[in-house]
Length: 558
Image 1 (tube, rainbow, N blue to C red):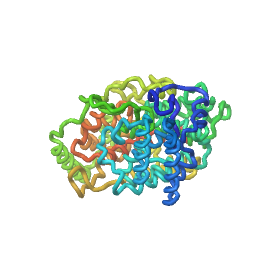
Image 2 (image 1 turned 90 degrees about the vertical axis):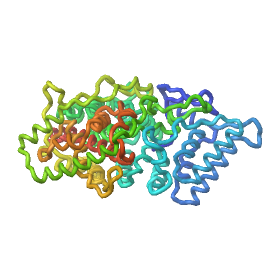
Image 3 (image 1 turned 135 degrees about the horizontal axis):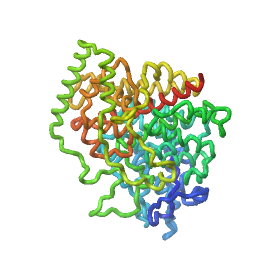
Image 4 (image 1 turned 90 degrees about the horizontal axis):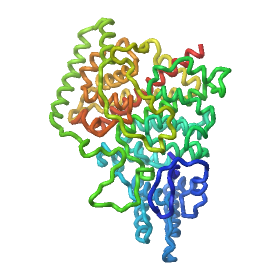
């Protein structure tokens, strides 16, 4: 995404006093940035640095160096001055650029600036994730090609991309889909797309995605006052708030009436069906991406609020990102971890044999589904109040996820996959209203469903289909979707309680995910396998939310 400075910062030359959060209004902040003569990177110079042509990149890198050295005024002692935008630009390149020559040069320029008396920023986090060791998220190695492709295409490699690069096949189709949603021709203007994504990310207190899309919003020409609250936005955008909160927290409550209020001839302002489907996919895509961001413990980007400091390091105080676990919230000992893997392997084999030998009645299948969806699974303690950056973008923050079927209460009707499914209904509707998007989403669903490396923890040559299927169907079960041909008894056999806690937390209220929740399940598995589980949760959640909305749109079109 874009690398613009993020609104809500009070910026001072040479990093004086560090960042402050603020909900600012008007375009003054962006105008001040644009008028600075501090060598801040321009869109043109940034584009050249991301060129596929090696010589073009080398020339852009030399130009960047000369611009920085000129701002330092080495020929005029005491005149050194570099603006915060340039300093954060260099910090980001030095930390996350997959091209070694760019990383090295950016680091050298920061050291030169520091030697000249400029206060330079440093990253607060040691890597992309607070949960996953940096050494397991490779910049050099087998995933470098996909990271370089991301850099030359998007202008940056963010933490989200680095973690997803553990699964390159998925990352490629994810980036294609996100690029189409945000950048390619479509019914919604670019700055609206980013703002709708901001609205969606704010529902889950996801400052990471709010800042990413705020930068994209401003780069696309958006009015900065919109970022200080909904009162500055067009009525048409504000009319999405009800659908946004239902999609994020209780999509099964979305009905034909919600669609009519937005698209019927009497609606004011009126959305076209093409505009609405674009907005719905943007919101659902962002909600599910919040699950991935929180579920993988992504740290703020080096140039984001909370991702850097101008304060020198203290030997007695190690700063932590908002995601970093407290000392008592660390990783538990791997007691019996190997035993758990052996037990799970044995259960997978036994379950497959049992399903081949026995055939449950339809009544028993329904009973097992009902037992699974009404099971009481506790989740983590609710986090503290979200930062101001997010609070001013959330309407009705008290509206949260509630179980589809709380014990002892009347539940909404179950959605039977045989009555409305992605394959038979949703895919064609999306492709009809937003050409090619159905194909892109379907490719992403297929890739994540079939993704396997035929291994599990320390074992190779393992067929993980039953485990992946149980994960997907359990998430849909939480959302009230039932597959008549699936035996939900397998969910209880394969998904132990700590895994269910993680999955439910991540899928239903991801902002409550903690390091302890992440580290407690699959204690002997690779981190890449846990990221794989996160991808399944993210995509299953996305499909579930889309199905309820697409069904309501289908009813409207009849």
